Amino acid sequence: MRILIVEDEVGLADALSAILVQKKYSVDAVYDGISGYEHALSGIYDAIILDVMLPKLNGFEVLKRIRSEKVQTPVLLLTAKSELDDKVFGLDSGADDYLTKPFETAELLARVRALMRRKGELSDNNLKYGNLILRRATYELYCNDSSVKLGMKEFQILELLMMNSTQIVTKEQITEKIWGYNDDAEYNNVEVYISFVRKKINFVGANVRIKATRNIGYSLEVLHDT
Image 1 (spheres, helix red, strand yellow):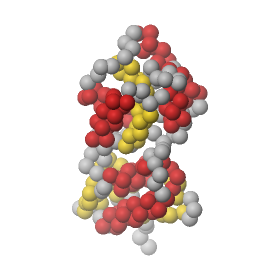
Image 2 (tube, helix red, strand yellow; image 1 turned 90 degrees about the horizontal axis):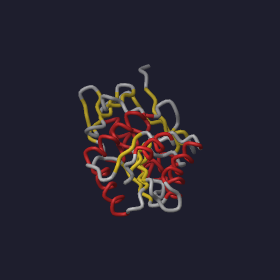
Image 3 (spheres, one colour; image 1 turned 45 degrees about the vertical axis):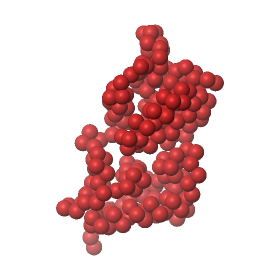
Image 4 (spheres, one colour; image 1 turned 120 degrees about the horizontal axis):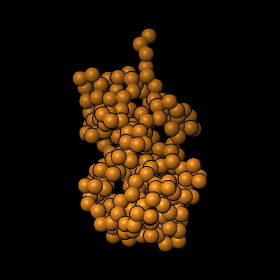
């Protein structure tokens, strides 16, 4: 799961990033409204933490603009403003939740989890495809009585493929989602990690394979006995 933080207090943005990374989220942080708007339009984020008082473009305006562009990513407004009118205005502008500074880390994480559930995260914290089970809480891959631990990027790639199991996920989408909007990761990084994931799927004996569609991307398919 990838989260965008739009917060002009660099120290706070960095602290939030560290907290979320520790909880196994991937995080990008930007420090002004224009950058936040441009990043949000990429569509690669599962949630956005958006400050209101931002340079260049305030958070309310960022929110209204991305909603007008049909970006439905869940948004948590994060601000020092506590007045009821500001909260109502933020929610009416398209925010999914509102958290006032200062806040407790536990409450922030709970609200982020709630945003993820609204986006469609499975309540049992598992993803299933064929006879393969991916346990998000432990980064483990299960099939029957076999299991194997996945590395961070292996987990993120397989999670992305399983959440989009009815379509091809392009290399561009994988690169942006896993390595980030501004990362210089090359496409061969994707191929390397796809290879790692394939080996672990084979190790647990699943009836699932990762299918490569030349010059496009990857998808999952169930192998049927002949």
